[in-house]
View 1 (cartoon, protein in one colour):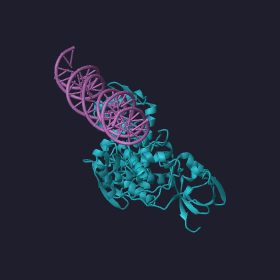
View 2: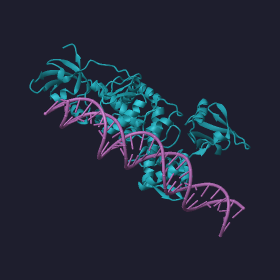
View 3: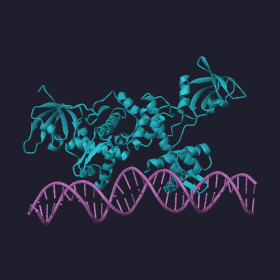
View 4: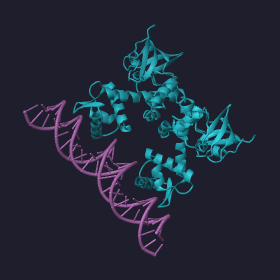
Length: 221
Length: 221
DNA sequence: AAAATATTTTAGTTTAGTCTAAAAAAATAA
DNA sequence: TTATTTTTTTAGACTAAACTAAAATATTTT
């Protein structure tokens, strides 16, 4: 149905679309896929012909309903595989992306159905990102960036914004994971840094880190 | 390192080599890969340049040590994935080939190492075929075709020769699996058919079927 | 050993996906 | 509104992997 390259374009455009709201530009796609704008133009033509996206020249592209379905299914597979790698094969959450990047292209609806059941129908991947269902729907959670929390607010870490390897290792060194409970003990105005409580330890968190952690706020303060 | 097409060539040549002993001809490869001899010529040149096989023009090809390693590793991955699909995801043994055909190309030594451990280091796949180790070595078993057995000999089914879907389903309908114990009750000379005992049932087995089942003979007759 | 047949290779195309360099179109600045 | 800059597209070329048709080389048969 779709080639490897086509699938990667669709997946990337899907991500760019949720991040950028407006039409996704040729240059943006090129940057995201580490390729050249001229290559993007060609592929966009092909995908438009396949009715998975609309292309308003010089105005950017947007996925059609069909395109969204295809893209979300690839993301579904990617995230289910990540759960498998971490939960069943004991991979570290910062090691799974590259492998899932390959596994997401395996074509077998039955495989994914069974994998989903095998993993007990997870809603989120190891980084806290939602796993779309067969129709592309995702469970939305009320989540804020740690940087938006005020002093004395409590919450649970539910995700990371950018799951780069060094960032994940930084968290790991401090035994901070998805599900870890935190409390904001203090916040500095001039640099946005924070002191947070994790279990019975206190950590200094820079603004950059605080902007990369998603928190579900606990109401009982 | 190797493209998808290259991997498929190497895997097929490996299989053809074990089946045919002498050098593998261009036409044979073409037939096995469902392609044209001229395409094979091109690819063989490429693979010879990569030092994974030797090509004596008009005399056929043979894998080098390096080529054998690469090929056996793909087969290793294919068979480990088949075990996973059957043992963990409860696929039927006649449903797994196509999916494993895709999964065998996933590149990650660590993934295979962990999968091997997760599956408890299996030596054989669901069809009874041996799983090569990291160095390409396989556990050989003393096995004969059912058709070679004599009256009153007993044994255990350890493999199937051709694992076509209809054949596997034929076995399944009679609850005949790898590990099933059998005894030859009678053998007809004129058509090679047999009557075999399986548990407390008796089955009529045609010559064609008997030539497709590998048996490990039990010494205690 | 020559003729016939089978096998393999060469030569030239095709498609998917990429690239560079240049042209065209749009957006922004003067 | 004209000029400059940015963005996008076109044109032409490249590689991998396949194909068809024809040529070359082996093998077999007579």
